Image 1: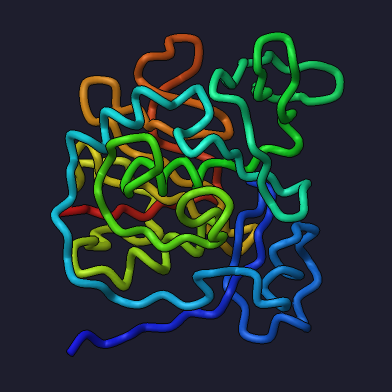
Image 2: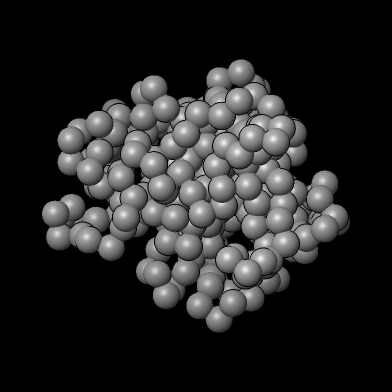
Length: 256
């Protein structure tokens, strides 16, 4: 009999502070995101995760999906957003993420979701890295990807999980996802994973995983991700997977 592993519902948060698990929802006040309210009302579909029978990971399909959709809306036509309630927006099929240089209001490289000349979602509202990764490894609508049965937070919303810590916890419960490195900072450990495996970035200042992407392998050592959109097809941004910030470490999942 499969043993069920249950995890409490997290709070959704902007990428600079993704979701974190909680024991007592009423005592947590940090997040401005609406997932807290939705979890209280029982509107989240996947409040608990359980280990499932292993399904073979389609690594080729996952990599193809990541490379085909790294700079555009996922094939379910949703973008996760920390500034909306519920925490996502629908987007036209031609929506792309347009890179912007640092400016007076946003001092870092950023991107806006645009449908032609129409703004769909600006950088301050975008929180799509986990949703995009769910699509890459799972069974997203209108696309062929990794084939894993990723749980879905919202039955009529974006495919998969939209909070970084939440996806990490689900993967830990899965028989074909092996956590081979956890919260380390040695870049040579990248040799333990291959193209199509996953990298989660731990932010010690926030006390949670705040970002995740798919490793694309050598020679680029790039990641495919949303928010900020990156891949080995884009040559205007440093593609190296490693984050050298002093409060950052990384964890690797090897999928099979």
